[in-house]
Image (cartoon, rainbow, N blue to C red):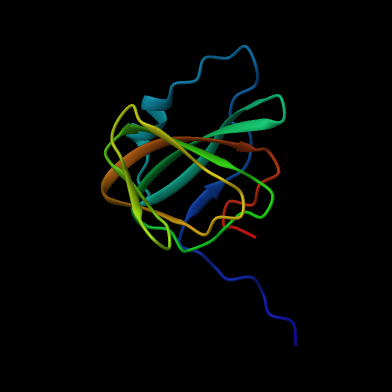
Length: 126
């Protein structure tokens, strides 16, 4: 019997919210967010997407076999756990997680991040 994919407690929206030539107001979107873990694609740039994440708590352990991920902290603090260490990012700091590396992101308090990734990436991992 085939297993259905796991259900995750995240609000993930892959639709592209803003077309080219439109102002993107990340702060208004973040301020209006009522979810503990929210991810919204803001726009597409070439073959990449820019997403905003408003997060509190932890994501599950996962990896992306074919895609790097870039995380940039707007406000709060992002922790990126790896099997052998944790990277702490404060506002105005960014970090690239290379493809194939097992990781999880988490935030002890409400944190706003921007992510740049391949448009075809599966946010929950491969």
